[in-house]
Length: 224
Ligand SMILES: CC(C)(COP(=O)(O)OP(=O)(O)OC[C@H]1O[C@@H](n2cnc3c(N)ncnc32)[C@H](O)[C@@H]1OP(=O)(O)O)[C@@H](O)C(=O)NCCC(=O)NCCS
Image 1 (cartoon, protein in one colour):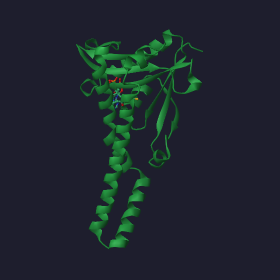
Image 2: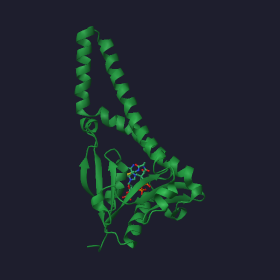
Image 3: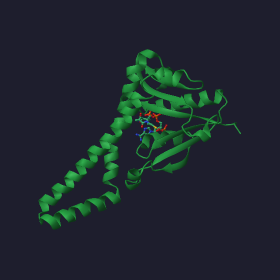
Image 4: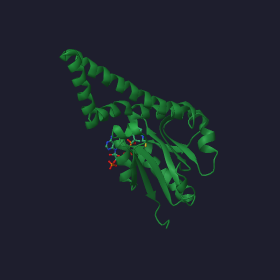
């Protein structure tokens, strides 16, 4: 399967394709996040409370259902907004001048996976956000594979590219973070030997919604 794919360093002509693959991958998590929130017990309690208050005030079942629906739609729109803000922030920050962010700094890179001339996947290696890992590990970021090319081992190959890159430069490990909603990504990383080292809610709202970020570490063999 992998024979039809080729992994190489980013070139300027890949700019738009890379930004599209990144934002399409991120957008997939809006419905997943919505489903997560719907299953969250705290949200069930809040919606029940809203329903009861509306019912006490109006004595109308239909009206109370409408109020609950309005709450739900507002929450959904807000969540869509949060993901859109996250994607937009990345597009105007590190994904704006990709060469400058990912190709010019020492020990950083962004790779694309291609099928013929088409860019179908991407991944990057950068210095970790966590200062305690500086000089020890590189961080894997911006992993994404276009929908029509999934399930063929591409993300595994891209992850291996980052691990080899870090190993060749003498780093002891590779770190990364992903969200609890990104099930496929967790399967990929855990299947490749990454160990989950921390789970953390990024904000109070996230805590209320039982939303966690997962932090992973991969120890490069023989690096003790
Ligand atoms: C996560 C993602 C990169 C996986 O890409 P992929 O090329 O399809 O993954 P691979 O084909 O290399 O699969 C590797 C392993 O993960 C498993 N896997 C992949 N997608 C899966 C899914 N949706 N559900 C369960 N397991 C899955 C595969 O079964 C495979 O394991 P196996 O070799 O034991 O069978 C892709 O789904 C994606 O781009 N998602 C959107 C963006 C994203 O979430 N990025 C991660 C940011 S941290």
